[in-house]
Image (cartoon, rainbow, N blue to C red; front, side):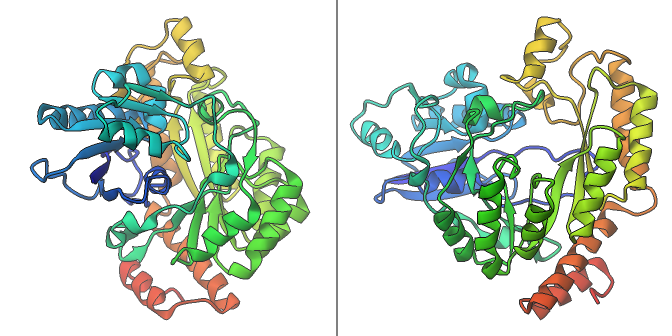
Length: 420
C-alpha cells in the first residue's frame, strides 16, 4: 500500500534567515508504521505536491498552528478525489475539532504500537473518525529509531552546509510554562527514553551535528549526567533547549559536544547574566529566545531588555511575540478576558500580534518586535553571527579529531570568508 505523508508549508519568522531543519515528527511517526506500508514523504516547505500522482492513503503531519489551515486545504483537495486522509501531530492535537471537518480520521497522541490498528481499519473500510490515545501514552521504551531514510537529505542544507538532524531523548515536561502547550500535549510527567536506546540512535545518525529537541534537558540532574557521559564517545556536536545550571552537568555537556543552547531570556537580572556567562565559560554558545508582549512588559522595559542582550554577549537571538496557542495558559487567560482579536490560525506564526497587550497597543508591540530584530543585528548581521557559530563548531570538531575538510570549504565558500 502506498501511503503519502505530507508536512505542510509554514512561514518562517519575520527577520529570520531562511533555513529548514529536517522535521522530527514525521520521521518518528514513520518508525511506527507497519512494515508493509510503502511511505513517501513530502516536505512542502521544500517540495511540491503533485496531486495527480496515485496514492492509496494520505497522512498529514502538522506541527504548528500556522500549518493547520494549509493542511486542511491539502486534505480537502485529496478528499475531493476520494482519497482518505488522516491527520496527526502536535497541530492536529491543538486543533482537533476543526481538523475533523477536513479529515477522514484524526489521530491524537503518540503513535508507537497504534498504527497496526489504524492501517488494518483502513484496509477493511472501518477507519475511525478519531483515534484518541492522548491519555494512553505508550511505554517510552517502545519509541524506536526515527525513519530518517524517508527524507530527501539534499534539501536540508544552509548554503550547502548540511543542517543538524533532530533527535529526542525524552518526552513530557514537568514544567507548565505560561505560553507553552507541552503540558497538554505530552503530559507533566518527565519520561526519559532508555539512555542506551537514545544514544544508539544518535550514534547511527549520519551527521556530525544534532539538535536534541527535548523541551528542556534540565528535568533530572542524574539523568542529564548519565546521558552526557554516554554521549561523550560519539564526538558529535549538538544543540538543545536549556541545560541545567549546574557546574558538573555543564562540564559533562561540554565534554559530550554541546555546541549551543536555546535559552529563554525573560528579564535583565543578574541571574540571567550569570546563566549566560556559565554557558560561555564551558564553551557553549547561546541563542537567546526572547518572548515579547507579556503583561508585565512596557515599551521601555522591552527596549531595556533588547539592550541587555548585547551586554551579555548572546551569540544569536530569536524574537517572538506572545502567541496564545490553544491549550495554553496564555490562551485561557486572554480568551477569557476577550483580549484575542484574531482567531485566524495563519496569523499564529509567533511574529504577528493577535491580542491586545496590557501596557501598549497591538500596533506598538508589533513595531517593537521589528525594532528588536533590527536593533540586535544592526552591528553584525544574523548571517555573520551564524558564521561565527559554525566557526566555533569547526574549531571544536578539529580539536576532537572529527573535523571534515569538505565542510570547511563549503562554509568558507558560503560565507565568503575562511573558517580558519
